[in-house]
Length: 294
Image (tube, rainbow, N blue to C red):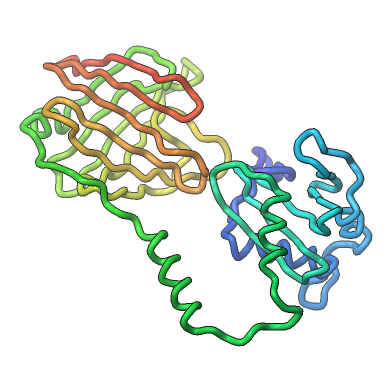
């Protein structure tokens, strides 16, 4: 768990809280039980009641949507919820005695999700156990949560030629000052330096592993992405790369927990020069040119 905060350590309050799904569900359960947790009243019941009877009309966002006390509600569907970035949702159904949690990286109508969940309830009491179906569900979940490697080919001669070279770049929109790929090491990795926002200060350096076998490699938690500083809680960069041809190395990068699509960096080597084309979500493609300077 982490929560974005100011330099004094005070949380932002309204956003930036990073939780595992099970802990998200605990927050929902606190609300489901009218603010009581393990026999202690942590929130006034009147606060919860105001949430469940939200009156601020948010219909322009979605038909029937209401808002109160940092929570959203669909009174007609007898449900209220906390809604985060990319529809990370804690949904509470008081009438059904249910808390549902979703994570994701897209958008959907909250009313549709509420209907899916409420319509799946088949009984007011627990149904008989069904080991076969439980195993089927567990296997499906295991399958979709297991990373599948992408196809890779043999490394060209260029891999050894460029490995360890430091390519430097003039100021650019993605703030990459220098980049080095170490691909012949037993632990392939990248080493980058970013331009500082304050030109009177030195830029930040950061590094991380690269998967060359079609699988992502996770780095240590960091506040840095590729060339930019990430605000708030530390993120984990997951990176893999493949040679597209003898001169072109393609890097795929995910920021785990951020909920955004992958970035793709296409590196084209020629002599002592390097062109980088960065395909970053919600931004136009960026092309920058650098050279070794050796």
